[in-house]
Length: 340
Image 1 (cartoon, rainbow, N blue to C red):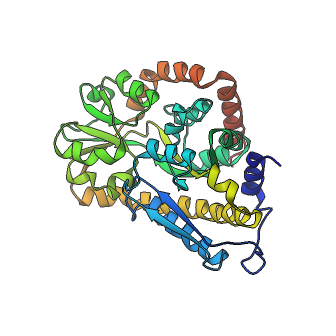
Image 2: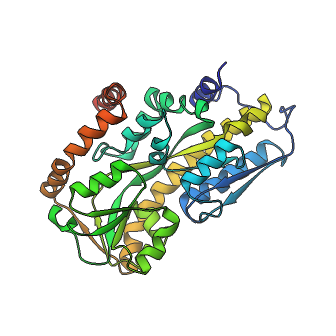
């Protein structure tokens, strides 16, 4: 069975579930997992949970080491390290995969104002559409174990509160190194500055940029409230991470080890989603308590933002793949129609 199909089927049903006692071919191994966020962020906590599960299932033979805070590089460099076989795992924002030939349709997930909530995103990404995306990774030197939630992205800045669509004009905002993000904010009138995440805090502190956009959990865990005064709950883009392994490393694993990793990754995905959503519910109050002034947009202003970004949605739907976009929207509409 091809690797892509093996991973996809395992993620759906844990068909290769095993116990540590029954694992006849588990060897001593170390897996380095690099992330750009801090170890206490829900993403870091979930890697730690993954490490615990792997250790338990392998009876301590397979050790997972977390390298947080960009210790192994940014998302782009770590993806390259996985492809080269010098690093075992990382969890980049899916937007960074768009720069790899043949993976453009990963960018469809980030179309502005696509999702209404995280639960419908789960169903889309755990379903046939998400599996189809993951099946594209092995030929690019990567193995995917599902999608982790990052969340709806919000804007912070040090210059002024944002209460209406026009307030974005002229703000110098850091964005992910991805054309969709750059053009989204340019359409809103902001000066979009692509920059690796590991450089953002310093750039905010030195006023090189006015602000940035990230989910509340990241804003809190990264302590951006120390160098930002205002935030707006814009919910402009929903963001997810892909839990990835180097295919070179995967191919060296025994079938028992592969099954163990898939099962542990499945459990870690569920843990991550629960953890980050719980964190997100308290982050708003904590950020306010730390002095960040947080505003909301009226439905009328959100409609303005949606209208201003229509050209971006149209352009990148075409660029990322009209056929895939049609498939995604059809599946999303089906999910919405079956909601209670």
